[in-house]
Length: 507
Ligand SMILES: *[C@@H]1O[C@H](CO)[C@@H](O)[C@H](O)[C@H]1NC(C)=O
Ligand SMILES: *[C@@H]1O[C@H](CO)[C@@H](O)[C@H](O)[C@H]1NC(C)=O
Ligand SMILES: [Zn+2]
Image (cartoon, rainbow, N blue to C red; front, side, top):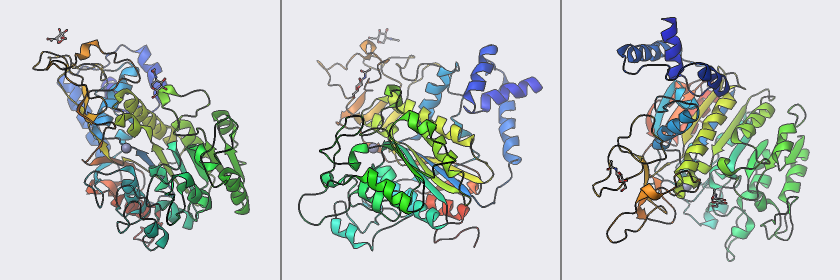
């Protein structure tokens, strides 16, 4: 029995503590279980049942909240990433779980926006961060403001704030960590109000008519933005002038002459913080969390590179997340940290499935890294996505087949092979030659830049409209079960953490 349990445990556990497990696995013979044996399935299912019935409901106040967001991380992406990551550790892959898939509570969120049936990261970010659904392309504004309506942005009446603001008002530390530009739609929705997600720097604003504050400016000068303690990601160019170069030799992008990095340091000092600006990995890793209370880390002029293409100066999402938690954990009232794996989405738009799965694996590792640093009984961890993509996972390949390769059971009706992963639309479309489909058997699936096949030619693959998964662990995690609108998420988080103007478990 003891042996069976160990085996079952191995089978069930997520990728938690990967290093220990890979050592363990290399000492044992793979496969360590027999799926042909009915005992295997019965024991495994009984084990899940036991863990569910013995899992007490946690109704404590969530002192800390960490919200992880996989941009464009559809349920299909999760299923494919299990295989991608599992095979790197010598498993077949399908039977495993990503770190957060082992959380005790899951739900489904509906992602449509006020104007469009399929969400973009801006309207969706506004929903899951502020609790209000919005129009596509807008952040931190209600559906009364259309994309590009600068007057509506300046008006202020339609501005909405959410988790970041509520946590700050409750005296909590706050942070935002991303692999995209820190001014990109997803992080922006946590602190900015912008009628157009593209207004990241002043140079992006319309040349004529009313002037609106750009997103970078709002991060440094805004009421909510300027009070965020930890900001880590890419997008350095949006913070200093075009005619200047940074210490790595890259030009800035601003036309108003503002040096927002310098301004950020001065602002933080005036607020009584001990701030530090960093721009490469070593400086981040060396930062003493007992000394600095506030960090601005801008590691790249634009988005941070894909993990598969990153250099030695680029911190991983896990490293940034851990440093943020180490600093924020010193806050006596707790913290709210928002972490985005932002390049899952950009990879899908290019139909580069390998990169999309790898970025998803990086998010799963960051969740695992975070869990090692927090007390799970007083920290609510929620992992979700903003919207889906059009990638499908199909065919009837043998168990353990390369998820990024060809479906290996049968060819299509034209007697040509097809890939297990493919897209409904995107740049991976290949025109038929002489009425024949491109022969994929000749393609190099090992290339990081391989564009997976798409049915419809579109330069940038589109988002998908179905629901996204929500995984929760910690105080009030049971609130996240069921199927609901995406804007319910911050209301439930605020209830658990006793923050914000709505109902809380303290009132
Ligand atoms: C599928 O098509 C490829 C390319 O034409 C061919 O090499 C392969 O043998 C075919 N496989 C099957 C199972 O028919
Ligand atoms: C993949 O494409 C990017 C640009 O999109 C390029 O920088 C990189 O070198 C390419 N990688 C490979 C392995 O071809
Ligand atoms: Zn996108």
